[in-house]
Length: 279
Image (tube, rainbow, N blue to C red; front, side):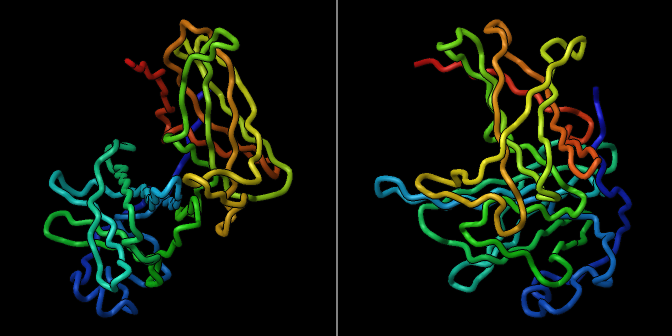
């Protein structure tokens, strides 16, 4: 029961302007490509912002997921983010995994106790002596501290939030409980979101539905209305599995308007393992 969630894979190499050119001349197309084109070798897939304040402790958090074409072994991928003082700072991302032989996923997370960053940011990719940018077609990306998720890829309609997926022992049922959090693009009022999973390598499989969350926590004591300003909804749910099962492989299906959209981690599926705490 593996389905493939496809993204645009056609990538062509172009030269681009310098970092200083980008910052000083935001109106320019920094990669030398027409704003109507979408063929740069770097793309923001999704981003996330959170803000919370709990017992005097304040946290500002950001997450980024970026796809790049594998144009060489030595490369750096980063988010170039505007700060509240008007300067720009480079936030390095880390390699996550290969989609295939030609494309990679890079991710980054950061948290600060003060509001260091403004809303604007772009994505920077350096490889083979050339710098490429994803600057949202010359408009730059912008997310306030209260946004939640943003899907930058227009083909992305459903995405699991791995930070809120877990398997843990539930003493009430004397079983393990698998909890899943998913974000979807609100394409129609009537929809279904569910999890297809297996505990035995797809010899057998199970399914459970997720439920819509009209509000959800985006940091301590801070709620985001769902759908948010970007039309993204949060759905959550859980299922009980045998307490002897510690690892679950799964994928997400989103059914709407007579169509199915899948997030199966680019055909690799997701895997979650129960965490063992040593108190």
